[in-house]
Amino acid sequence: MAAHDVLPALAVHIPPTTKPLPSPTRTGDPRLRSPSTPLARSTPARRVAHVPSLTPLITRETLKELDLEAILRNPQLRHDLLFDPGLQFRPTSGRKKRDLTDKYWQAVQIEVETGCACTSFDERGRRLPCVCGALLSRPTSSRTLPSRIPPLVNELCAVLQSVVHSASADPALIAQELRHGVFDSRGVFKNLGSVLKQHCAPMRDRAVEMMVAVASRPGGGVRAVRMCFEILELMKLVSCHLPLDLAPLRPYLFETAVDFELKTFQERHERGLLTLSTTQEWLRKAASTFSSPPPTMHLLSHALTSLIFSPPTTVSTPPPPTTTPLSQRLPHIAPPPGYPETLYLDHARLAGLTADAADLGVLYAVLMLFRQLVYSTGSKVSLEDSVVDRVKREIWEVGPVRLGLCFSGRKPGDDEEWEKWRAGMRDVVLQVAVRAEQVRSGVAFDSSKPPTTLPDAKTLGLLESWTDNNLKPDAPLAKLFKGRLTKAVEQVVNNSTRKKESDEEKEVVAAGLEPLMPEIRHLGERIGKLASFHGRVYRGLYEAEGFLA
Image 1 (cartoon, rainbow, N blue to C red):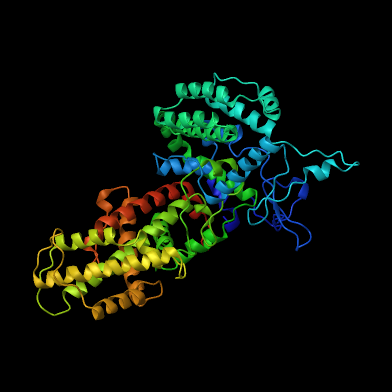
Image 2: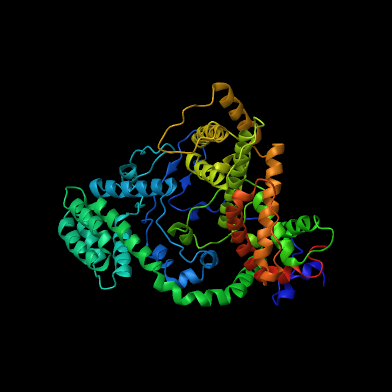
């Protein structure tokens, strides 16, 4: 079987591509441009206008995508549910969405107060002058600017009915009352609040009461509508991830996962969204480290572990699933550059595992520094396991949030995150130096009493210099420690992917890794879980004749 016929070995057909794939057009028809995207003027000197969306960002369509049927059609969410049974959804809180939302509601408020429907902003977020009067004053112009009020009222009523099925409202009447300034927001939201309290959890009562209070204030109608949308979105999110919804379906998801993911990959391959070139290169590189062809799962364990400890690009952990990715209908899911195409659904897991591996590398290095300081005087000192465990715990507690930021691939800079990391590592080496001195002096650790002596400025300077020189990706000591950790974790991965415990290899622990074995096993078992499922899906592809040739 030839290399280009590997996928038919899986009982699916992905024909080889002989013609170049059409590249996606970057500039589309301006008539199809979304109202929420910037409109670039042809003259560079002119200001760029941002026109807020004509519809609210929370709509019946975005909430429909949180229905169970929509979730089951979503490859990314189905895949994530296999690894995280407690997967939760939450409203998007990113800066970009907040800005879009704020500008939309500002435009609605202006239209309600003044009737202006042309609200737009420049690139700095400043409101541009109104042009409604200029358009209406042209005798030959019959153009009218679309109002945001009717779509807003329609969506509010539709969303309300989708969450509270017994609710009813007259969108046309509400829009008419808003345009004429006779809308009784106080009475409407008082009744609406009573309805919401009957259908939402008690924890939402405070938010509902605030919405009713805001609606009773002069000019508070728009703000109350916005709060109502937010409450309805939260109610929908709660209903979509109740354990009772997915628990009965979990066996079905596991049973159909392999066929579903293989079919999904085939469809994306046929559409030209995914290839296999990077995957083949990734596995060939891993296979080249063996003297003879290894078993497929052994090769996959080695390849995945190496990918996590030596990622091809800087990886940032994505946020948990939110409503925004769902609303994009997932037209194209792709791994970051340099990552295998068959891992396109595992970006978040790879990023998290890589971050944990980097943290483990720093922890290992600092513990080795602690040992070196303890034995630096040449005197015979007994270092108990409980003492090392105590120091390890203190490194986690005293250190920065991301111990392994220095190994993330990002260039050191002067931004806030790097400053926090440097400050945290200064605290870590100070703590380690103090503990090492106490061990040498035979002083028992007592958290209730401050240390009697602190390292001098020269010692602290040497320790900080050690940190700067060794806690970076290209440092020889960092490479040595990473190699030891990679081998230890890979051994756990291999053991976790074996079916019989009798086949497990005896753990061989490198020097200084004994205190880190709980963390190493935890990381290795998580990688092993990913490797096992990935092998179930793509093993037939990887074993096809010519795939690794």
